[in-house]
Amino acid sequence: MKIVFSDTPPYFLDLGAPTLGAEQFTANGVTHWRTWCRYCGEWHQHGPGEGHRIAHCIKETPYSETGHNLARQEPKF
Image 1 (cartoon, helix red, strand yellow):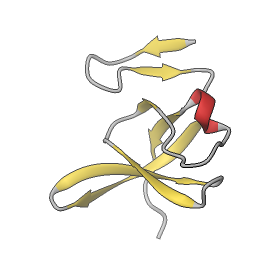
Image 2 (spheres, helix red, strand yellow):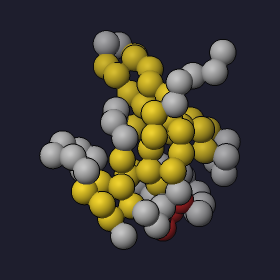
Image 3 (tube, helix red, strand yellow):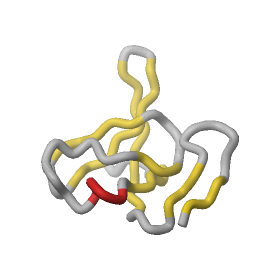
Image 4 (spheres, helix red, strand yellow):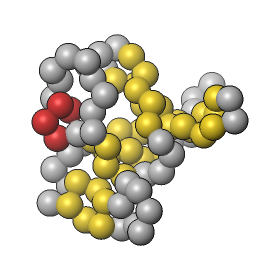
C-alpha cells in the first residue's frame, strides 16, 4: 500500500517496502542521501528526502522487487 505524503518527489511511502536509515552528505555542492546495503556491501546514493526509492543493487536482492523507503538518520561518528 502506498501513502502519498508530499507534493514533491519522492511523493509517497510504500508500506510493503522496508525502511532504511539514510545519512545526508554533500559532494561538489550537491546534497545526496546514502544508505548502506547489507546485501551488496556498498553505499547507494539517492536524492535527498524521505520516501520510497527503487533499489540500486546491481545483483538481485530482497530490495529488487519492493524497493525501499528512506528515513533520515544522523551519521554515527
